[in-house]
Image (cartoon, rainbow, N blue to C red; front, side):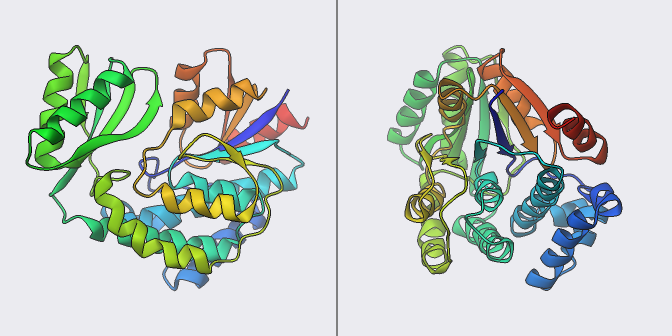
Length: 312
């Protein structure tokens, strides 16, 4: 068995996330306490009690998901679980780098909170949109985005290549609507508007990247203990500068999740442990490769089951 850890991104959050871990394990409790201290807000209370509207605010969602993932990871690591590589979807790449020893928890929490704030500020609420396109080839989606952009009235681009037949597009709201209509006309089974507050991973996020870059350049990064497969190119890297470059570029570049999983499978990883909230990534991995083995580790029950299966 070759085991890799995967860390979820925005959209996986849920009120109550991580509370059972903090009640069960001191290591998890300390991560949430550190998040409260570092950010100067009761992030743990927001994770555990909501309200949901506040948890959905991007600048809250991003550190909340990171805190839950790292709380779960520290429990797993203390139990003896070791992985050969890590990867994370969008925001989850920060959790992956922390888990691999490249970034301190406090620095990561501060950085992702800033990241969330800058991403929200880059485009006025309601001006941007995202939509999932289901059931047609990636190339057709990319072509539809190019045609919709060329028609004028905004820009739209593929933002997440998640799995075969599942691409998310993002950009100006009108352009996203045009591209979605073109995809439907060309055979998409469904186009689903997503309930998000900004067009993440689109060219409209360039101001967020420009704002975040100085902060990322000022953060201390260490060589990773195991490689992280970057969102921007699906390439495994371990050096601080390669990791930093990937985190900067991913803000307004598409997430190449399908290519990431395919590369990890080609490199021999056959078992994937999804660490943190939900099981979205496990579902995507199974769509990408039905032979891949997936385990979730975000609740007390699922973590204990994963430890029993992987460590004994």
